[in-house]
Amino acid sequence: MSNPHGRYTIEREEQTLFIRVIGAWNLEGYRDFSAAFMQEAMALREQPWGVIVDIREWELSTPEVEAQEDELQLWTLHNNQRWRAFVSDPSYIKALKIEEGAKPVEEGIESRFFSSHKDARQWFASLGLLSK
Image: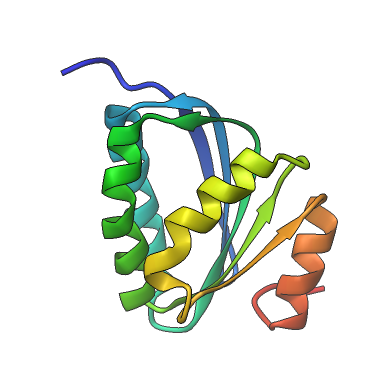
């Protein structure tokens, strides 16, 4: 087992988790993140909730991580996540990776891409997940 690679922050506000992913991720780093994410999300699951994910500093993940992503995606859907916003630089590769990873839940979780946190927050406020 190797050391975890990839860093993250998770903050909760109303019915929203704010996540920032940083660096290149290996399976151990992803498992650490998944456990922390699920712990935070448990407090939100009684009502529909969403995630705003800042991926501007993300340097992608190993193939082993991609093979594990479906499990977390399905867990979020079964635990009432309905929306997610990605704050991203204009990276085709990142967008493609996100879209590929979202396939298991594309019918149940609406995803949008934004270039700023402000725009993502405005969308979530219009959904009633955040105060304006």
